[in-house]
Image (cartoon, rainbow, N blue to C red; front, side, top):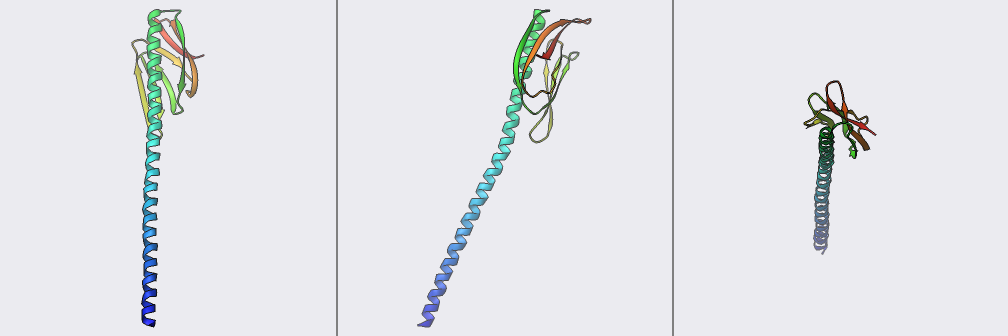
Length: 155
């Protein structure tokens, strides 16, 4: 009788151990899946933030160029104002009137430096300090010694 009791006890302990092991395996798998999901969401979140910022900068660059071209062809004393929202990751905005370009220096969420260049049919000059947040820009035509130029400045 003792032998039978010992076998039953051993079988019961083996079943408990098997259930515990299966429970640990299932929990480990769930932790792995959740961790992978969190890692992927952070990866896509960074990409999405960068893409939104670049799309916003594209809108701003194209808007400044189109308004500047309109003001240039209207001539002096034409002027207009536009309100734009600059994302945080713009390092600098450089106006190159001789090349008829506006250059946005941008840092992505991964720390990569990118230049976004917008070409114009007209010379555009200007200064925008601390390009971050909501800004109202004054775009006006000015006569210079060289000829007509479009000036962009913060209002």
